[in-house]
Length: 167
Image (cartoon, rainbow, N blue to C red):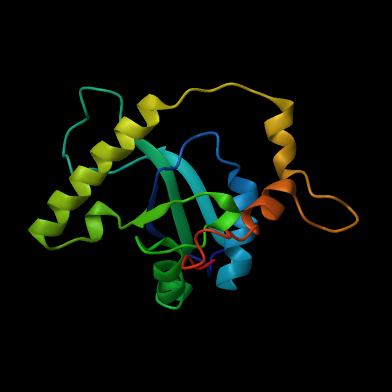
């Protein structure tokens, strides 16, 4: 998101479940800003778990979503639509789920659910393998003529067998 101007205060909306350090945050930030109609910031950092002391092990990390505090309530309905558990449209071809910040929750039951999701994020990140391949990287290269990437074209393919699934 860069530095904030004095009139602009960043508000962390939450973190993205199933995010990892290799996601192209710049591209996702552009797509998300366009979808929301306002600029957003993305940072890969530790998830706040509510613990008062430093964790004994490496903290769980995820991409955190930031918006201007003035826009925080305006983007809520759009974010809920994009990142709900029932969403079938995935920005940039990646299924993510927005989880609220632990510090914003008052309900004890919801806090327990968030702890479960933090553990799920930790397990997800531990199971990831990293390997570089130019062939895979080229999926996101935008063709100058038709202005689409191979990933976008693949995601636009409609299933003949599963016509009940919405795009």
